Image 1 (cartoon, rainbow, N blue to C red):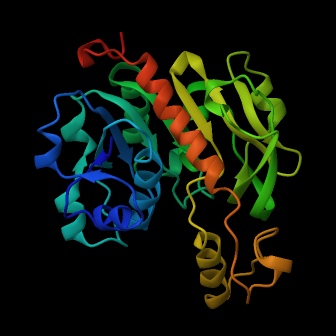
Image 2: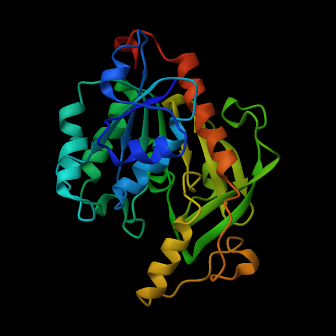
Amino acid sequence: MPIKIPSRLPAFDVLRNEGVMVLDEELASRQDIRPLRIALLNLMPKKIQTENQFARLIGATPLQIELSLIRMSDHQARNTAAEHMESFYRPFEEMKAEKFDGLIITGAPIEHLEFDEVTYWDELREVMEWTQTNIHSTFGVCWGGMAMINHFHGVKKHILPDKAFGCFRHRNLAPASPYLRGFSDDCTVPVSRWTEMRQDEVNAHAGLTTLLGSDEVGPCLIEDPAHRALYVFNHFEYDRDTLKQEYDRDVENGVPINVPCNYYPEDDPSRTPVNRWRSHAHLLYGNWINEIYQTTPFDMNEIGH
């Protein structure tokens, strides 16, 4: 089954050209099944790029997915056309009464701020509480995951002396986890952050299980069953050239930045990088979607009970 998204959303043509099955609203309405309702709270500045990345991963399963895009109610996007935001996004305030099988909360380039210094922190806290009554399973990504684990458990993020930047090997710490079905003993994951969560502070909370971790860059993927949530602090969803775009941007702006490690062949930025994480990205998000499908109530009114 394909992913259901508006035919005018840029991701529609991008995914169709990549061979991902996509349905517009008219065709989807003819299928007599209940699609999985997945929402994306997109906090990233490059909205369209982020839409494409996550739609690609959740749309590559045998299930029909209905994707909804959410924005913070009072926060105005500065890097995406107002017409795009108006056409495809709904503010959280308008969606509070709805229920979803899954929610992805993305990262945001604001990790240098304390959580309570973020302009939309109060509303995001409301979103996180809303996940406990209206969402069956939530996936917090990078800063979004850090925000969730801080909100629910008080685990703090710590500023790094140097940016963790590049592709790092991570160990599979829970091979029997349904979220890691098909994973190798280790895998490469793109990392791009100035902050870290510390493993000993995560371990202090008995209800949290670290599924993937690295000796170099710390915990990567954490399961929080009590809150029906996963937290990933790194970027399985990145395209092959996303780290390159970030590196080129910083070089152009004169920002001190190291060449992303283990990314370019022979660490040479003049050469084309190689994507070595795509298969594990599809496994992770496919496993998450499958776990939702296996456990979510058919009657959406029962979600959160």
